[in-house]
Length: 219
Image (cartoon, rainbow, N blue to C red; front, side):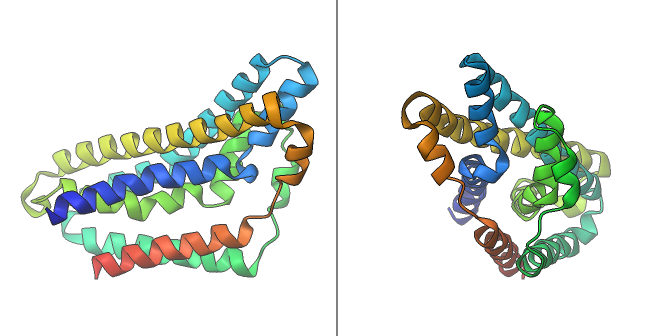
């Protein structure tokens, strides 16, 4: 029962992190509302949400797939997971110290939502946050990794990486898109201006927490 509970918790973390990213204003849902308000057409809201989702998915894949390629090193899976956990903790600590957003993000026009979403998710370590969770899922899938062929490990790792990225992005899109629709249809501009709260500290602490939990589970 314990492996099943662990697997369920890990997939739950994939969905929960997606919802967290979705409702976070910093990931772009206010831009979707703004696009619809400027064009005075609700269809522009859904187009903007789709563009944000595409960029977010690309950012998740860009981080997860290289780690999937490392899984053929079956003998080093524990070390890889420890390294990934330490990397996430270090990123969270770095964000607590340096809270300024990268300047290059301000140079990307909001009209290029796919690129903007990709860069924002990458700069904030959104994909990196998924790495310890993803590697934990892979450990529950590959019960006999030491005897599995490298090709099988690589194939399964890529499949799991794609599934993790898609499920996470779907949760992010539904939650962020849902908030955008609520604001556009019912809550209005007052909520939009008041909802832009700063989650930088919470985000940095969540990265440290995910990395620490992953590290404890491995050790």
